[in-house]
Image (cartoon, rainbow, N blue to C red):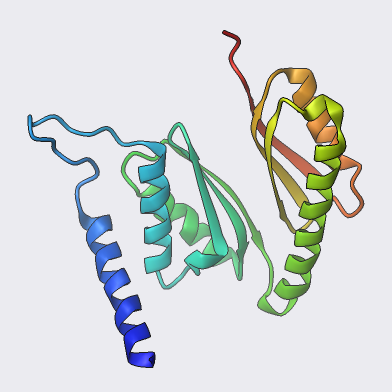
Length: 185
């Protein structure tokens, strides 16, 4: 059992290393290159973070929008936070990095994560009950009491309402509104 697990992890690391070292875009049969997209950058970033010993990649959430990579989660130290940002900036195709990683000592992490999960659940409940937010597609994530809102809102008023709704939830320290406004057709 242990040997199989180690072989699986080893194979994943070898494949991940090959993925990182490989070309950023694949050549098609006609010689044209496939463009780099956000999913590609997200995957490549996750593998690079997982493969680096300075960073515990499983503790970091990666989202990419139009080449901007957002790092969220909790790391043990300032060095790990800086390393994660440096690794991400070094990936070809990344236009910018938004580093929202929180530094939380390992001994405090469990209490902080439990509290964050409860806050996220409450914010989602408040958002679901708010009639003005029916047409918005909002994702909620909490790190050390800071709520991040991502997704789409139909207009600026709805985006502001989402921020206010999250802000009034007990336990929320602050709100980062990263909602994008939907384009009018």
